[in-house]
Image (cartoon, rainbow, N blue to C red; front, side, top):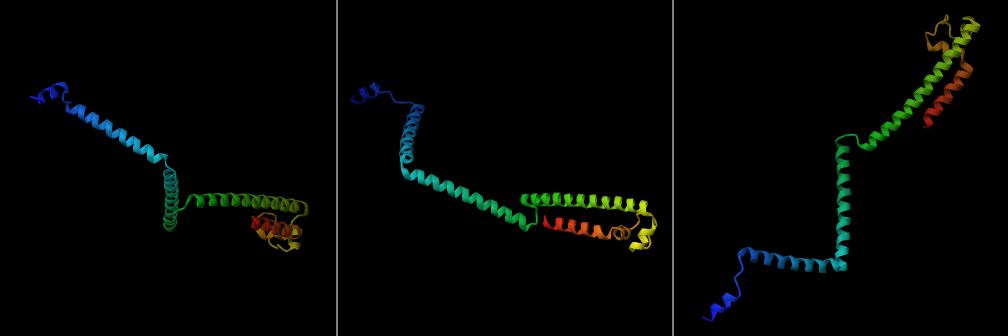
Length: 160
């Protein structure tokens, strides 16, 4: 009969209430433990070490992927950028060569119209009558200044 007054004054909790009480108790204990851990200097050092390791692993992964791509002979972004720059330089040089060829043709036409075909034969081309059929006639009539121009163009293209 002594047990009855205790059970009547303190009602037994339902299973749901008991689970809730245990959950809140565990949550508060974990929160306190986490706050103690985070408050220490060693936690900051550990966090810095983990960050450094993550960065190092990422770098190693990137280098490994670059190595795989290089071994598979797949062009990397650097390769494509380098080829793009080289193609641009080559296009510029080709444009300069085309402009020089056009200038030489204009000079050749001007020389041919003012001097006739006799000047060409005297300069060593021998076979040209009046047409622009071969490169021998162009270099033959402009041997003095044309040779200098060609050497300058060659030097310019090899320097870049």
